[in-house]
Length: 394
Ligand code: HEC
Image 1 (cartoon, rainbow, N blue to C red):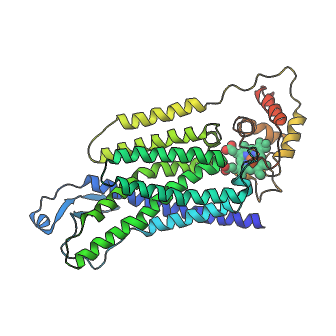
Image 2 (image 1 turned 30 degrees about the vertical axis):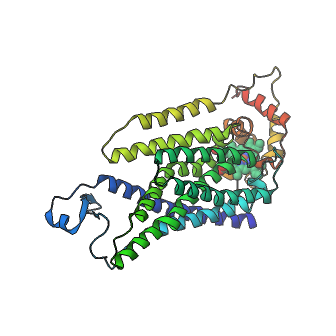
Image 3 (image 1 turned 90 degrees about the horizontal axis):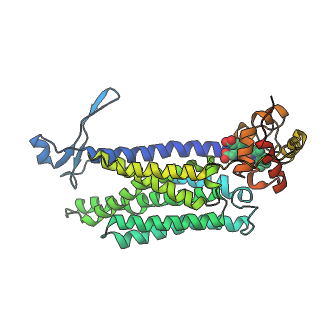
């Protein structure tokens, strides 16, 4: 029953997290595109009002004409929409999700039984310290670099993220490590909105209400952080979906895999930012795609073990699977509320049908049995590998 309730909590939180995340990233993409697409107005009255750029668009059966005031309009409008709850609710639902899925089930998801070291509680502490420490480190670096080259900032911060990725893959299972890198970056994004962007806008407005000229430092800081957030979107989204791709986080050098994919994501994001400004710099996305291709070639599974002379007895295979897998992967599993990923391995026909996926998960990636809770041995994996190398008889 408890496992079933956890499933529901996870379903509802994940659903909500996606919805508010789409609202946030969607608004962020829209505003970056809008900012880069504005053209100076031709109408003299608009220019007099202080409009620096405008845009005409058609969407959903209506015409839209957003206008951007440089600094601010002469009088503040009574109704001013603030974009902040999209960011806050994405962080809150994401944090609850990590608590339900990882911290509440730390023995399964936060520790690696094949690499004894941390206790589940210590692994959770590492996770929480990553979120808080990741923000502090970024924030200090930002303050130091506010007046300097943002490219240099990017290089330094990328170095820090790679270091954290390496450290986390040493301490946690790959799946949890990748998710924590994503959560660390996403925490930076939300904290930027909460601690800098929104307070900066509030200070600007307060100064205007007092009839003072707004101090440009608030706008400068908010802009710096908002640009960083923009470059973090694609890396964060990759980390969030990475848990479905064991071939990435399950690799012996998973930290380098993630480091290359994150770099590719930033290069591709950079291209779109340039493109909105009317510059097509193809070298960036090409470099990004080349990096992804390098990773794809590097991770390609090597040829399976050469088939040994004697054919593998299928009864042995079935026995191993019944003992090590069917606790979770069966029509009526005992270790899970329902067969995960819809994979059921409780009959010879099903085992034959799913052979390539069984080999991929249990031999090539060693992602299964999950957290090896059922204690599969190396000999058993070797036997599955030999079975995998055999041609399937009809
Ligand atoms: C403790 C429970 C548990 C055990 C034991 C277990 N699995 Fe899984 N399995 C899971 C979960 C959970 C998922 C879904 C993972 C995800 O979504 O990342 C999964 C997913 C899978 C998938 C689908 C992945 C895909 O995309 O193809 C396969 C295949 C699989 N397991 C095979 C096995 C095999 C083979 C064994 C035994 C050697 C095994 N599992 C043992 C929990 C388990």
